[in-house]
Length: 439
Ligand code: GAP
Image (cartoon, rainbow, N blue to C red; front, side):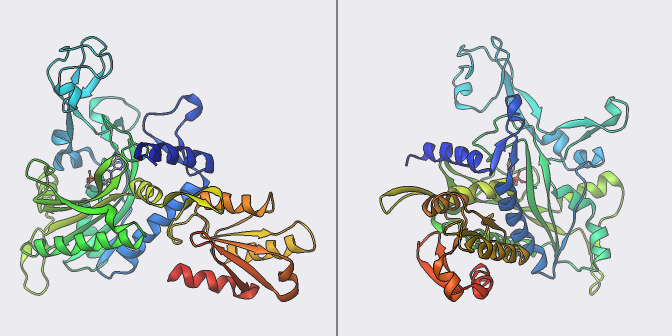
């Protein structure tokens, strides 16, 4: 399968099966904004829960936070976003459309839209933050921004969290939340969108220990991606050169994934030094220094940041899992998602709609749901068709209640990837699945 086909096929599967729909589709769609359907929201929730579990619940040195999207406008002056979060844009004097100045066609002097040559004016900076107004008056003084990253909410709450949770440096603040960027060149489905969700950790360390912590987090984040079942050969590190570094960073490494459109950023790990805390201290006039209880040393901690998109993780999980296979002479599309990511853990089928099979199957389906294992009951169509539907949804196990079930209280469990069938006692199905989810 050619790589560009894979993106098209994934977009179409996502819509057909209810993973992801274009926003406001009946009105022609909103540019680069997407909605998550019934299966998509389950996958997305699983991504977030696995991140939260690894980053917050399994650690003593990280605290959670949910800061508001709307913040004091001075935050974005202090952070450098008002001045520096810009892309250079040029306008075509013929069709009046605007493009990033660094697009290859634009650099070659040709308008990508109307084809006119040498019709571009001077490049102008375009700020990527969405603006809105707070309160009933739409005037400059009431302008606020939709946050372009969750990180700033963690910086301005650094002392609140540290004091309330009685943490000592080194410790971190983790957040999952929406971010907004008026991207000039969004695209590639949910790879780059204008509204997206981030999972960010700000880890505060003593200056001088920052290089070591940077390496620790870089490796920890790569290990997390691998734990989701992402193929290791599709992941690599890319260190930023001096011309790629963001305005706040001393050092930055991307974890990249090999998408159908090439190796591109998946997650960023940044050494932000004391830039952000220093600027907030300066702009707010409030001291944000940490006092070491053992040595009484007073300092602004350095920050090691790990930042990854929820949507981008969903995209990588789907791309990495998509397979087209020939099984017993029939084509099938299967999403080989790690079971812990799969939207549905099981599907339960009565072989036929009679002889008491539907009742047994429905009872099992309800027991699975009650045990927090999302399950799907399906009695429609041939067993083969029911399997295909679940393969496309990424459901790892299909359970069939058949004639033998009524005699010996066992069911068959069919594995999505190996297609093997296990005969398992009805009262052991839950523990059978639980062992595999945890393992
Ligand atoms: N706080 C640091 C920060 O925001 P970033 O590299 O601009 O750094 C971090 O963004 C991550 O957020 C990216 O690696 C990507 O996974 C995700 N991300 C950024 N912009 C995005 C967009 N427009 N659409 C979807 N995901 C995006």
